[in-house]
Image 1 (cartoon, one colour):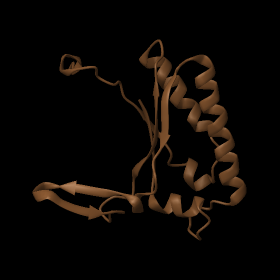
Image 2 (cartoon, helix red, strand yellow):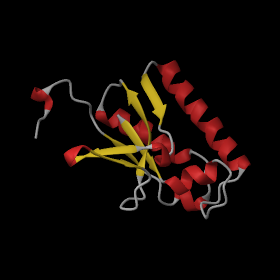
Image 3 (tube, one colour):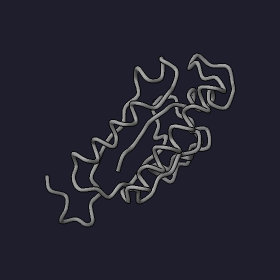
Image 4 (tube, one colour):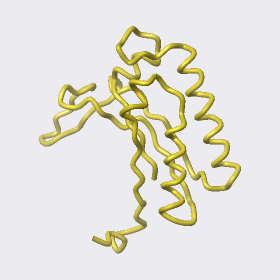
Length: 131
């Protein structure tokens, strides 16, 4: 699984609200074009199992101890899961190569300077914990 991250401010900027994330309509269009081509290349190679983008953090609910439900976004964190790809490929190294391609995604400089993705194997069961 390849995981990417963002913030409420990123979502606000991409939706056209004034923020200091420097998103313009053109920058958002270039990012969308890149992501469509990236997803198509994974689908064409047979490596894409599923990909989804997550809605803005403001649309989140956090459920916690004592059945407490809190609406997002959350002051205690800026970083939120923005989206994911599940890929089926030959190795962990290949999944890492795929994730590295996300660094080619066009975005404002302030975004790309701190952007990263996590690559994590998905377990099929408790026996896969392998600590």
